[in-house]
Image (tube, rainbow, N blue to C red; front, side, top):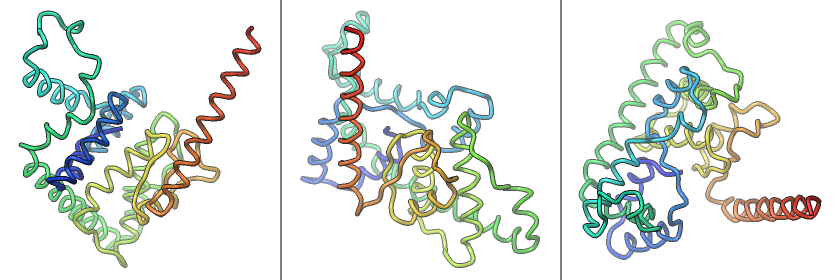
Length: 248
């Protein structure tokens, strides 16, 4: 899953680091899914009973990527689309070229997200401090619903951030981290967050964790994440082999 928030994080490195990131993204190739940057977009779509995966799909990001690729690929004949598209047209590494002229704007948008989140949470904290009943009225603790995973994570995370405001101040990077925590937890199978956001997401999850929500890892658990993914793929291959054997 790839969105503008990922692009914002990739927009900083330059020189050899930039080239290494591009190589990594090229290895991912065309195996990516464009998702929304703003979790509120997903929440609003869920309220309209859209299919969960269409709630997070970013048509605008895909169109922007496609337009950039077509402008830089004069050999592709528009009149012959889609047959004229090369097999690697949607290679994710091309996002690095898309990022270069947008780096400054993306970094500014990233900073604005943190400012906006801090303002919202502090305003909510002030309301809660004046009237403790306000929190349950405005942000009641939600039960998980499979058709509204982002709504569940969004509301309960906002509620938790308000309660934490007494002891922890919102920092600039929290804006982008909040969006990634909501969308990644709600729509992915596996997600990586920093240690603090992993803790927050796990605090709001019901026990046992719904299979519909992502399993979260942080930096020191990346080796475990790789092992778990490999084990899952081995299990899938085994089940497929058994299914083919039984059919034959």
